Image (tube, rainbow, N blue to C red; front, side, top):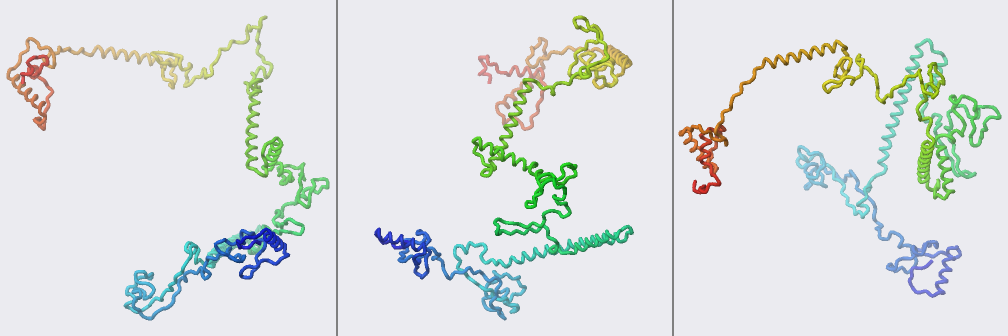
Length: 536
């Protein structure tokens, strides 16, 4: 092993060092010893045994691999919770005024505030708490489980075990109570037999047996590393004991072969029996049905694809193999459907065509049809009119004609009763006569009303000289009213020039007289008038 010294070595010294290391590894030379006198394993690599240069190690040692920076006196101790050190008989100066302890003041006291503190009563002095201080390292300050006692978790386990035990005891008592009630009820009846009573007593006895003492068929015991190699297991719950063993289903020597070593029977022991009554059809039934068949097809597809150059392996990449198999099935179905559609498009599909007529299916009929030499029908078959895809000759509501067989005044109706309402009930000829009478009566009433009405008297509208109309020649104006109109027009002009002179409550009169119109004309400014600038 190479030492930690960094001194220069010649080629011969280096060769001797290598030979010594090989002898130590082979056990021919004694192992190297460190500073403490302990042997160093010669098989430790050099990068582990060589100390860093800044440690200035003179002899080989593994001390640098240990946690040499840690404090040997450090211990992960924690606070002694609830520990008390001294309890005084009377109050001491500087103690808590509430409880009397010296380790805290009244503000930090955790006891219930007393009505009269211990400072004044000198009674029930609380003991002093144990005050501890620890110098924790970096990990100790951040250890959330520091100071946790693992033995306290046993209380939680005991609590759950007690709950489970109480539940089992309660269920067992309920089971015994039901069985006893059932036995008492059957004992009162006379029709009970002795065998039934024995069965009931056996059920009660089985219920009284503790669950841990029962046959425990579900228990599995395994033994590994046997002398023969591999592992063996003992499984007690192999089958229900009331079921017939598979090798007893058919005792014929030439029937299905049963292998006692593997407990397998691949063929069906009863091939001629009713399949609805059989509960076992051989082990091959499990291999040829369900997911086993799908898994077999998946393996075959993976093998064939690998032989054709696909990079697929069932054991190395099972998800990839399954995905490729699904894509293969989709593409195969699509190609199959395309081939089928191509063949049907080219040759047709007899199954999808319309059904043959009854005459061709039966091949004969009793109807007499006469043909001429050219093959035309002379008599015996009437020419049928072409029919549409809609329903025809459907009569509803006692009508004898269809809707739309009658037209009047831009409305469709029924010809049988001349009604224009689609869902009306047919009234026949009586309805037609009543409709005609009602129409004639309506016409007579309308003629009578037009004759009785008087024509309105037409009054000639008197032309007023207002709002831009031409002034008639015979117009007479009242001078007094005209003067008032001129005065009002001046006031209106002033209000238009200055809005502040407009009153708060303004009354508007939309009735214009002849004098108002004349005053408006007199005061109006004509833009074409050359003297318009001198009017105001």
